[in-house]
Length: 334
Image 1 (cartoon, one colour):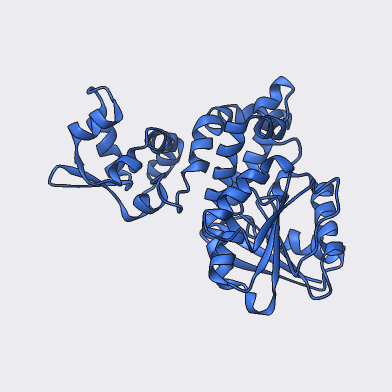
Image 2: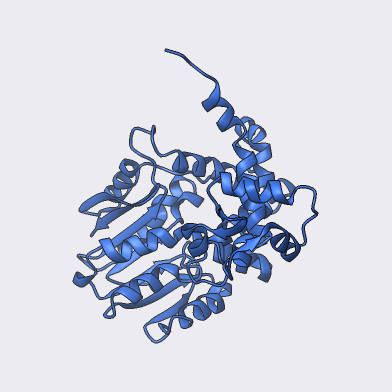
């Protein structure tokens, strides 16, 4: 067999392509091109870029599959036009904006984190990441948009794959802007409920839900999921929530959900669930390393792990179902 170093070098230098995309999102390349194709000089001037490397930048995005170019005119691909145009409700760039603004530089300290087991973000200065995000309105809004973005594919899949006809109410725990309830609400007019999150997120939830005309069906419920009892509904959901916390905190949240559900009620847990063999879902495993960077005790987990925790809490049935890309949901029935 003729072994080559290509795969090693591609992975080792993957940050080149990553930062090129993140800078393109920061510069709003895709939002600019959503108005129509442009030649290189027009796009360069629109973005206020220096002429030295603008052409390399645009063509790198073409080579990376993020832009198209025909007859000297640059345009978005179907994917970047749908998901990276800020003017569209399908925009997922909020998460990439946060990655560019925060995670990119913090991941530079991964080696230190692996040696110490300690967060490598603002916590190194004695601060708590959630206190920082939730105390700054601009950072909070960006974080909420990021959570909507990273959950968008899963939210749409849950709206289609889960048997909503058998249930009437949904409350999303740690709801952020309300991305999940909006997708479920759009697809299933009989579902009502709301979102449960810290009080400071209420206006962001209400604004986002109202923008889809769903504020009469989904209400914001303020609270702290560790300090307060969870609200009751036929279905409770936790999307990209459990991985933020250590094992005992994970189990606490699952137990609280169990007690809040009626008999026959369901807990949906979704995020980048790691495959049980821990060999395939690189996204889930890398997200778990992100939890090392970001939190004191958080980590991602396998579907078997979550099913076991649910069974310990009393759930009588559990299953794991793939959603989209690297994301899956664990369904627990009381």
